[in-house]
Length: 181
Image (cartoon, rainbow, N blue to C red; front, side, top):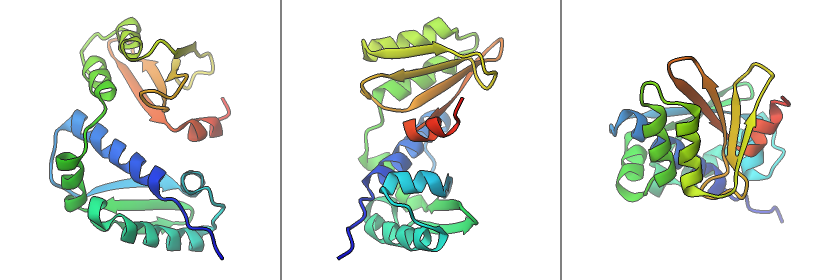
């Protein structure tokens, strides 16, 4: 008998990305498209699926999350998959989930003109005594910051100082490791 796939991590990630977008841009009842490489999806599902099997898994994911994400539509070009969340799924996230207090304060801080790395790091330290801060030298970004114990989240924040403002990208720990920096 085949083991059932746990879709929880992908659903949680999609919800967190929608929440992040709504904090940045405000809430709108609209279609949102998110793109994932097959390697990330396999990690979320603890599988080693090829393209066809991943399409089948994502079709099952769509059925399992119809109450929350509204019946997502799946497409792909090779090993790059698009998950299109309909307005009803975006509405559900807005109306029925609570976004992270940390990410809200983080986005508010980084969005201020002239925000410094010290001000941004204060936000991390407000939420944990276990913050990893690493000044990087590889040229891709300037700082790697994350919560060592995964609380309040386990994302890797890659922060770049562009002079008058800071920008960031956040990745799952596994996706960050793929960069091999």
